[in-house]
Image (cartoon, rainbow, N blue to C red; front, side, top):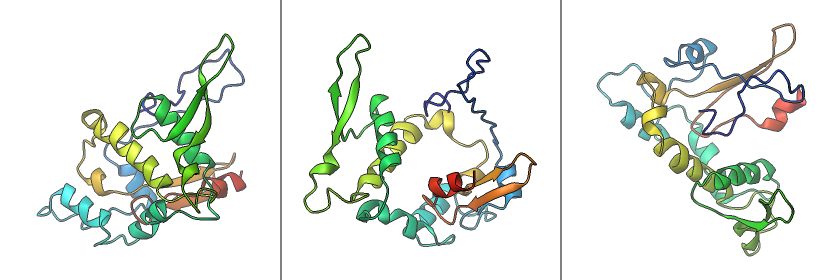
Length: 202
């Protein structure tokens, strides 16, 4: 997972400027359930296949009910939204060969070579190209992740416990004393915490 997401989880004690990110897998999802995350549509009903449960939530036809309010803005955009993190994520995915490619890259001069982002296809949208978050911009990032990560590497990433397929996520930030200073539980698919809200408590 760290490799797919281009996360540096190596332990390099010689580089004091590098912050190590440790990933602790939870194959059965027990930690999430203890944290109080939503378990999705009819989690204990053995007569409904997990993929069907996931489809019901994804289409907004069943609890939790926060899926559509989180998904639809990815298509409609937001004049006052923020897109910096979306562009950075799209750049990361595009450099790793994920489709669709929507950024315009220009080669850089010098010994290092490489390229820099000089624009986006969303810049060319009439009337809404200057919005904070353009229509379909966030939806494109989600599509890139679904195709380039989830579907392409499904055999590696698929849950070993079917309950995890419909179980939602959460986030908590703890201070030096071990007490939570920020907590969040997803209210639907694609309903994630605002990173600016998290950073504001640090």
